[in-house]
Image 1: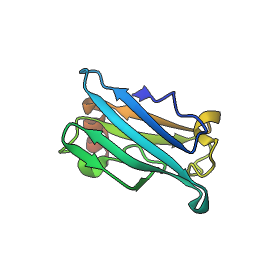
Image 2 (image 1 turned 60 degrees about the vertical axis):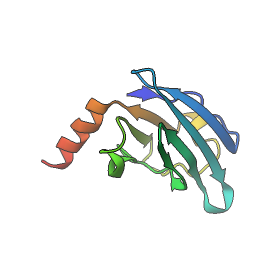
Image 3 (image 1 turned 45 degrees about the vertical axis):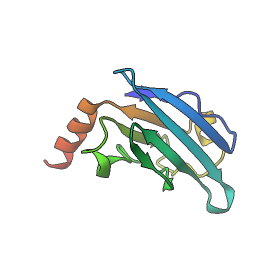
Image 4 (image 1 turned 30 degrees about the horizontal axis):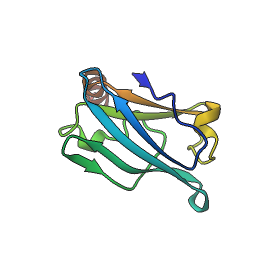
Amino acid sequence: MLKINQITDDPKQKQSLLLEDGSVIELTIRFVSLQYGWFIDELKYNEFILRGMRICNSYNMLHQFKNKLPFGLACISDDDREPSLIEDFSSGASVMYILTDDEVNEYEDFLNE
């Protein structure tokens, strides 16, 4: 798992995340105070584009796209509370990770047990 360290408490952020194979994920996230949550405004990987997904505690938020993406995204919070405050990522209360293809497959195997 690769920890995404650069998430701050800015309400709108754009990140370029480098995968192990050298390819890039373009990730734009936004905090929506009226909905008490963080959202993926846009995730781009090659020809794949995802828009409008709420960031929630999950070992792979992108599980439904496992056949289209060679990675996953995990969000884990210390107290199992969903990331609902603007400072949750900058304070470390919630952390996002990029999962490798192998980790996505391991999680898939776990779900199928």
